[in-house]
Length: 324
Ligand SMILES: Nc1ncnc2c1ncn2[C@@H]1O[C@H](COP(=O)(O)OP(=O)(O)OP(=O)(O)O)[C@@H](O)[C@H]1O
Ligand SMILES: [Mg+2]
Image (cartoon, rainbow, N blue to C red; front, side):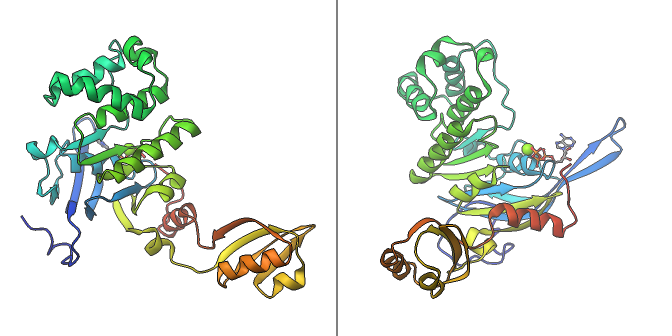
């Protein structure tokens, strides 16, 4: 099956890891199964090998449904897809996929270590490889080996469960990893570590597809993002494509003189010693001027909307003011 033509004839050399075209999922609900909910509407998307793709969307948008359809856990009602070059649900491909579910169900009475052994067994990973890989993964996700070996998972905190979940998603050294809300339940340090793990997976050349509500994390680590709303993929692209490119910086600083700074900054505002303004000139030259003026820069950011502002705007434009 070749989906390339359906998706507008990609001419680049990038290799698609996931290609879906017109994917739709309708659930029958109600006591008599006489009601229908369309959770995904004609979704088409390509994610390339080595890419980190973040899927955003309010509660009930269909993110988990899309991820499960890509993993072959649920069958789409219509549409087609290829994952690592094979049709959705292909058994051999499943060996090369990793999956962190949204609400991972863990075996309460197993220790983390035993749980990882169980999952490794399902992938038929030899015992010698398991003995090497399990401690490596525990180290990577920041879960203490003693807790993993001695503590049953019913005694784990939410953050510890999320870490074991991440370790089991990677047990088969997958090429393509699907993560459903990987930051869920993690404190700021845990979120930072999870971002580092995702970045290290990217460095190893793995393809990562994840759902998230934490827009700042997505902004920091994703190559491309998509927004799903009420089952529709309403936009998708790199941050530059979605948020726009700009050469203007928002600069904050201290000291110097208004006369000296005015030549460089527009909308200059002073508050006591501190000031802020917009810089549209060469930042290197401006830094030299700041030094000459005996001033100091305290913050400098690209003056484009944040992903959060873009996200809220996209939803409001479509009349979506609250999640379902
Ligand atoms: N098995 C099911 N049977 C019936 N409806 C379902 C089923 N699974 C999901 N849905 C419905 O499909 C829609 C999308 O659900 P989904 O879980 O994919 O959303 P989500 O974007 O992952 O939300 P969240 O951010 O809360 O995790 C919701 O309206 C949900 O109620
Ligand atoms: Mg979900």
